[in-house]
Image (cartoon, rainbow, N blue to C red; front, side, top):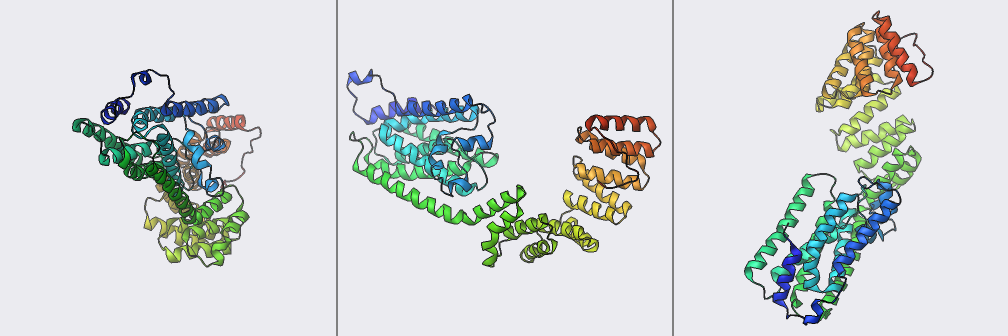
Length: 463
């Protein structure tokens, strides 16, 4: 990336009258240096409390003020600001501080130190608002929204401002800024784990602010009336934008909170959060997918069936609803109905691993082991690391007295779960059934090391 700090001094020196010589050597802490120092200090404080230098957890980032839609949109609006100064690992903070150093020198020379600081904060908050609008379930943090805001403002101001700058220098600087923004946006969209919502929000807010600020560039009086109006209007727009994002995201936020409650094993809380949707006869499929899973977790299978059927009425090819409905039928003992749903699932998507594994288990329950073995074989072919399918394949092979295949399947299951005593017990069963007593004893001994008491099954069963 071009050295914007050095270019910035040359450009602004050409646009402004030269300052008195004594000012050139006066010691001053620049706004850019102060921001870098604050960011680094916060990162070091986080590290001093035991937070990892490279992979801090989401919970740790939240404790230090990270941005998270369920909290930010539920009253903790201050996270829009604090998250700008929190970084997720040493690489994250190092890259962002380097970019801030490169862009900050030019921005503070162009706008003045106080306008630069206000611009940095406002575009950073704009990035945070865009981030919670785009990432409902992800914890985000970092100064990249503000950095993109500086880049956007500089692009607009240098393009539109009436500055006495050599054309060649202007083209070089603008080209570098545009390349920086374009490359990093493209990289963020192509690679996961990057908060491009903050990047886009910061960039566009910076472009707008820079457009309106360009009218008084090159004048010595700062802050000027135009800037006060621009920044006041920006604050108003951000407040309105936060309200809009909160309103638009409210449905998704409630759905996510219900999903989180379900994942924590609290189906009643999930059902309670989604109750307003059901009272309003809302037809959002995501609502009824979670409701169905909640009722299934409560073993209220008729209610779960009704929810999944409602999803399939509006989305007949919804694979998730079909799979869940198949398991509901399976748990209700309606194996014929379960078979139809599993058959429909793998017909829609022949590469659906979960569908093949579920169908195999259903066929196994019906003692149709030849067909079950074929279904499990298809599942492990698609995903050899699916332990449940390896177990199913091994058990069906045992029932078919194909002990070599059973041994191979249980070996694979044991390799995938080296601390899984059950895999070793089943492997011992397979060896014993094949008449390989020495190998069976070795497998049982391994299992005894993994758990204190080993019970040899008297008959074949399904874990």
